[in-house]
Length: 346
Image (cartoon, rainbow, N blue to C red):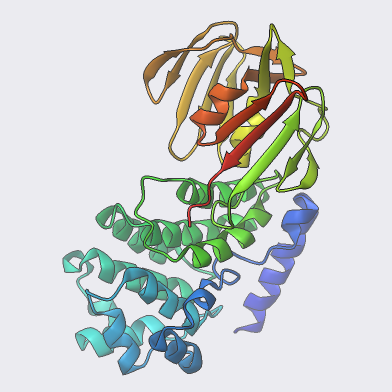
């Protein structure tokens, strides 16, 4: 790896470390630190790739095989490893597979899985310059539209340049969360591999978020308590705000932003109209403060209690917001405890 490029990365990461939360500052990069191939080391071809550290004829033949599972092909590329400057992985694949230089390939005639392989190889060839890789992987994702693997690798590569910008640091996590929590995708990656990716990528979020592949996640909250428990570990619901669940007219309410961000979503507030939009990978809610009418993915629903503002945060009936975001919910009227469980996507 060139000394100038190494020095540049170190300087940029040092700058970012000063501008982002301490938790995130420990991060390296989406491409270099997501070694999900470890979940596939029982596969001989992944073992061979890990040992070779390059594209051999055997590996190229496997990567070009349309019948080979896409996730295993991704694991093969991941196992080969990465570089900070072009090292010829893509070129070797082109020569072995098509008998010509990569620059001479007509990419427009290639299948989606071929574009995926070439795009990921390009990204691993030179993780400093991933623009071309991102474009190919975007095309592959569109062709393989139901594939979790195609969508996740595209998300990782598209996040690569963003991690060096303090203004787009949070988008790095959101790129991946949009895939991780999208239950419409075909889960064609081993959950153990997905868990490795998410365990690293949550470092890019300054919020307490859930890894949907690390087992069932249980959140426990209590009325008027500013803390909550995630799988038994205690955290503050809304650091700096002191927001708590509220009991109002016999109904329990939760702060919308807290739960939305836990599943990788975002909340938009329009102060001129008092309207709130909640967006996650599979759910979009539109509501107005004081109005029991709410739209869920464009369909009208009626709440049993109108949303209101408490401590600067929008509050919604816990059962509605919990179920809308994919949680199983429970309520203990005696202890005033709220339980939310998100099943693992294993």
